[in-house]
Length: 187
Figure 1 (tube, rainbow, N blue to C red):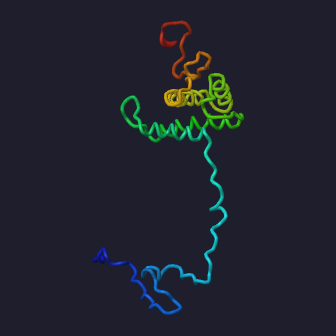
Figure 2 (figure 1 turned 135 degrees about the vertical axis):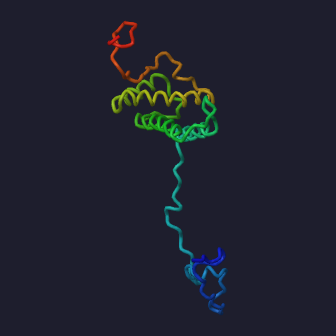
Figure 3 (figure 1 turned 135 degrees about the horizontal axis):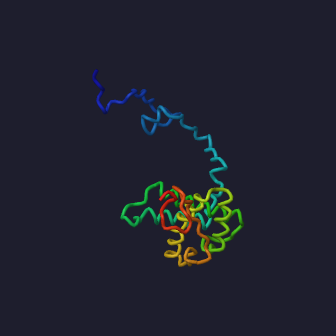
């Protein structure tokens, strides 16, 4: 079976109508298959009102979140590898969770309002709705955001504050004897 040449169109074009006094010439032969031309007496319709609606401006926290993700996209991790999309998504999700909590708590301003006490309240509220492992993950992912915030905006790093509560992941594996040097109960 032979294929038609690449330049041949799949469907032949209809004959282009000849211009008449009541019908101006078409701009191209392809226009013959499109919508009919409007008469000069028919005014253009106004676009829908939604086209003219004001666009909502992003909040300062959303702008900071976007700036942080752009920064991560343009840098590499400590191993010299660009951040994966999954990592970028996880870091953005952590910052977005903090933003959502700050909005719910009616905190004004951007992320420079965050200090150790506010983060302790955020992590405590997050722990009520999620597991300790989830809080630990958010805490680890937000650390990178506040390191960037300290470097780019001169904000004091709340993770350097001794008052910040740390949520570590729960231990898994065999039980250990408290106070013993052995690794497991069976040794």
